Every structure is written in structure tokens, then in C-alpha cells.
Image 1 (cartoon, rainbow, N blue to C red):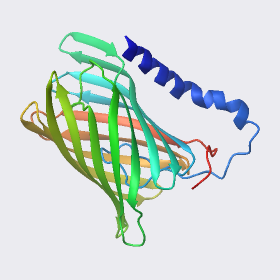
Image 2: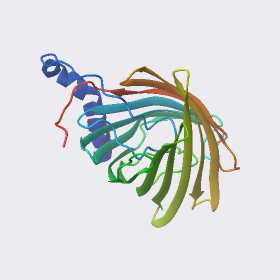
Image 3: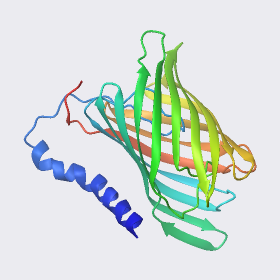
Length: 269
């Protein structure tokens, strides 16, 4: 019961926080529009951080079709990031609502909540890549069916981002701990995302792989997406991905946006 209370408390804060700030923000002139640094819609996460002192919201909807755990699954996903120092960022991840169907059985449930931090180990400069590490831990578990990647209790990532030859590259090495009953298993993943600007858009493709320790199998897929910067602090996106193994979700489609609140909440350090 206390997990459900925690979930809705966190969700309420996510929704109400910007509203509660309005009386204060109304008395403050907005800063020049900060540039968004989207972590969506790819599986890969950028090694670079969001603008220092600004809240960044990444919201979207994802539909999955044909998986070992479900026939269809539609979820709202939300990520809030705040970089409070030049090399350190706080992250809150949630799925406020999941609707799933397996054959004739339908369910509607809240998803899970995760929180963590990401720190830059080596800032990028010229041709030198940005290298970061992150740690994420689950705060609330959900009985809703998961995608082919499964869910994890805690996990870490090594992240690398760089630009080369007009292309942007994001690569992640992922190490998770999955729990089923009293059994704990290690999960490993690798992702590589490549994107390129084109006539105001950014087009990207990605390959990813995750072990599935409780299936003794692997999930492998490719992703294709496009994004468009409506304003420097507002980016919309959409795309699809296709699972390449029998235990992968066969198809996923997604759309969403990244928005940076144009008011600095803390001074840059």
C-alpha cells in the first residue's frame, strides 16, 4: 500500500510542480531559451547533460505489439532531469499509465518509478568524446507486463557521445540487476545510436542488444526515428523499432516531445 501512495505522491509532484511555480515565475523574466538535450526517443542515453539549472521534461507514448508477455501494450512515459552542477544530473523516470492486453485479458495499471544520477567523467572537446557514468535504482515496482528488456532493481551505465563527420554518435554499455522472487541475475546491454541533421530535422537509427537472464535468451532490435526542434527548448519526435529475435517485442511505435522549462532554478557551478 505504501508503494502506491509513494507512486501517486511522486506523480502529483511531477504534475503540480510547474503549476506551483507559476506565481513565482510570473514575476521573473524568462532566460534566453536554453537548448534541449533529448534522451528520447532512442534506447541510448546521451553522455552529455541537460542545460545547467533548468528542468527538462521528456514525455511520450509508446505502443508495443506481440511479445512473450503481452499482445499489445500502450504506456505513457515520463522522464524529468535537472542538471544542478556542470557535471552532475538528477533523473526521475516513471510510466504513469500502462494499458495492456494478453489474448482477451486487459489490464490498466500504473508503471514503475526509478531515480538516479548521471555524472560526466570526461567532458568532450574537439574530437574527444564525452564520457559519463550513471546509476539508476527502482523506487516502485509494478505488476504490469514489461517490454522485452524486462525490469531491473538497479543498474549502471557507461555512456559515450561524440560528433564525427557530420554524424552524432551515442553509445551505452549497460549493467543491470534483475530480481525474480529471491533470484538475482545480471543483465548486460549495448546500444549504438547514430543521427544526422537534415533540412531542419534530425534523422537517426539505432541497434541495441540486451541479455534476458530469466529467458536464457537475448533481445535484439533496431530503431528508426526523426525529431524536429520547434524551438531551441522544444523538440518533438516519432518513430518505430523492430525486434529481431523471437523473445523481442515484434514492433514498437512511439511519439513524444522534450521541453526545457525556460527559467533557471539554480545558478551554474
